[in-house]
Length: 305
Ligand SMILES: Nc1ncnc2c1ncn2[C@@H]1O[C@H](COP(=O)(O)OP(=O)(O)OP(=O)(O)O)[C@@H](O)[C@H]1O
Ligand SMILES: [Mg+2]
Image (cartoon, rainbow, N blue to C red; front, top):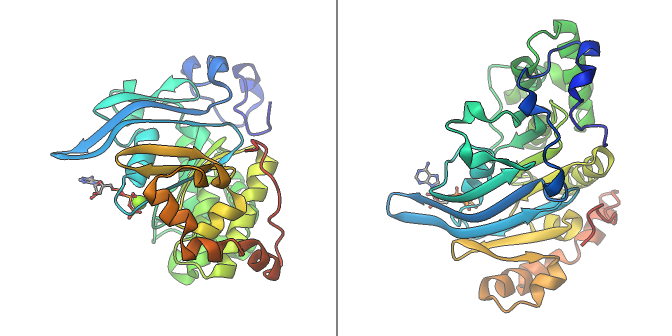
């Protein structure tokens, strides 16, 4: 069991906070799907007449960083929102840790939220709260009995873990650079020691060195904490540098999923244009660029290819 797995109910007495009363929340019923924390089958999403996803299927492997790419508006963010229960699909089944997310009547019924962390596109930090207070938001929600001291201590730990100086915990988002805001968002996403991390364009707007350093941090956290990461990105450098596999959204569904060399073997025009175009060729030098930035990126993921 990895260290960030939820504690079994028997350990409840020793905890400084209550576990969810609902036994269902911690029941280890997901054994059969253990290798795939996320399983999507036959997903359809529409907004009025506009069909975003049609018969979309995808499985995310435990321990991998799965890059999710696709043209703007192809439904990457909507897909992520569907997986975390914020977008109820018309058809299809989405299982997270073996639980059918789509069976929930509303998102308050989803009892496994504490097992994932989310960094939304744009960051979405609360501007009136300090970074530390932002990190405390999910902690207070799930563990209301934690003392102020402990909350502060955990928040500072997450801030440092995300590569920010400890003092950043007392700053407001408006006092941070773009890169620092991303790290603060990551700290909040890591607040509950999640097993699954959803990141929507985490390096958008960062300079190349800042992006490379964020990538390296993410790979390291993934490997040391045993995370599974659903990473939406347009950043070819990120895809080459840290993703174990890449899923491509086009034509309303996942047209291919695999390593970049595997994707290059397909003849889908968008894939060829994206991964074989001039920008992709430039991105092939990402590792050299990362090396120049003083970070080592050549660490294979646990999930392998
Ligand atoms: N709440 C909503 N109501 C109506 N339409 C929506 C809603 N959310 C998303 N859409 C539409 O769904 C489509 C997919 O949106 P989504 O945000 O998932 O795209 P994306 O692939 O994440 O794009 P980008 O790369 O630009 O972030 C878009 O056409 C968008 O306008
Ligand atoms: Mg998006």
